[in-house]
Image 1 (cartoon, one colour):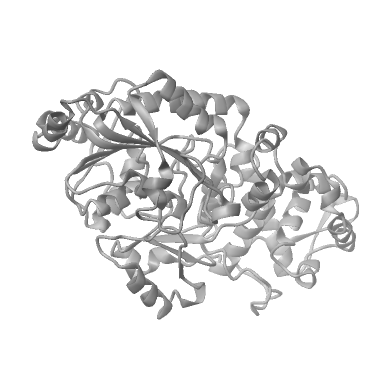
Image 2 (tube, one colour):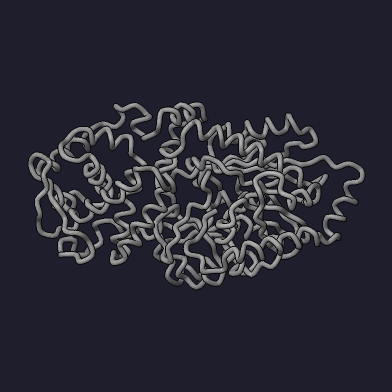
Length: 522
C-alpha cells in the first residue's frame, strides 16, 4: 500500500534489509561462527569505562556489533528519512560486512524501532550514552546473554539484568507496546486492540506471489522445496490462491524464478485486493496509484495480458522502478502514465470509460508496522489529517473514470477508521450514483477460505497473518445507455491519450529500464 512516501525502497544494487528486512535470517548465536576473532571491516571497538569514558580493547564481535547498531540508530532516530533507506545506505557504506553481519545489525535496529518507547524508558537508567544502551537492548534480542556480555562492561551487564527483570505488564500499554499516545488512543477504539497491537510489534514472514501468466503455484512450491527454498519452509498462503509464505529472509532476487518474472514479493493481503477488482480479459482497467507496480502486475496477469491496463502515478521515479518488473513479467497490456495531481488532461480523456478502477490510496501505512516500525514515530496527527484530505480528493478524481456499471475499489494499508470506513461513508454521501457492494461475496470467488464480516475487506495480522489492509468495492449505477458506453470504451482507440503519453515520454526521457534493485512488496 501507500504511505506519503509510498515506494520507500532501497536504491542499491544489492538487496538490503528494509520493508521485507532481507538477509536478516541466521542471526542467532546458535550459528557457530567464531564471534570473538578480529574483524577487518569495522572500526576498532571501544568499551565503556567508569564515568562514561571509553578505552580501547581487543576485538570482540559483540562490542563491534554494539558500535555498528548504535551508528545506524544515530542516523535513523533523526527521522529525516525512512529507516529502511537509512539502513540500506549504511550497509552500502560498509560493503565488507557479510550476510550474517548485516542480518544481525538489521535485526537489532528493527527490534529497537518496534520497542523504542519502552527501551528509551529503560535507557534512562544506567550511565553513559543512552544511544549505546538502546543498541544493547536491541542486540539482546539477537545474541545469547553469554555472547553479548563479552561486549559489555560489568556495570552494563548489571544494568541489562536489572531492566530485563522488569515486569512489562506493570507498564502502561503505550509504554509496554511502544506507541505514541495519539496512536494508542486511536487504536484503543478498535476491536481486540491489545491483540492487534501485539501482532503489529512482531516481525512479518515473507510472502511471495506467483505470476499466473508464467507459473503454477503447486509447481513453484515443488520447485522451491526441492532447491534453495527448502530451508525457508515454503507453504501456500491460506487465502490467496497465488501466494507462497516463507520463513526467514531468503535472497529471492538472486533466484532464477525471480529473474524470469515467475515470482514477486507481495503480502497476501495486497494480493487479495486483485480478487476484489476481479479483472476480466479485454477490459479497460486503471490502477490509479500504481507506485512500483505490485498490484498492477497481478491485475495484468489475471487479464492474460489482454485489454488495456493503465498504471497511473504522480511520481516518475516510482513508475521507473516498475518498468523492469513489467518487462520481466511478460505482460504487454500495461501503459504506465505519469499524471499531474490535479486536473490531468489524460485522466479527463478517460472519464466514464474504465470498467474497473483501483485506488490504492496514499495512507499512513500503519497496517505495515510489522515491516516498517518507524512509521509510528514518523507519523503525526497533523500529517494524518493531510493524508485524509488527499485520499478524499484522489477518490473523487478516480471515480470520474469509472464507466456506468463499472467498479471502483478503494484500498489502504491502514488500520485507522478515518482513512478507511469514514472515507467511504463520506464519498457515498457526496456521490449517490455509487453503491457499496459486499466484498465477501466478491472475494470468495477466488479466495475460498476467506470469510469476512460486514461489507468491507478488513485484514489484520492477529487474525489473518497479513499486514493490516482495508478495501471497499463500489459500483457506479448503470443507466439504459451504459452498454453502449462500455462497448465504445473497449472498441474505440484512444489515440489522443496514447499520443499524449508518447509526447510526455519523449519530453521526460525514459522512465527507467535499468535493473530492479529490490523486490517491491506492494
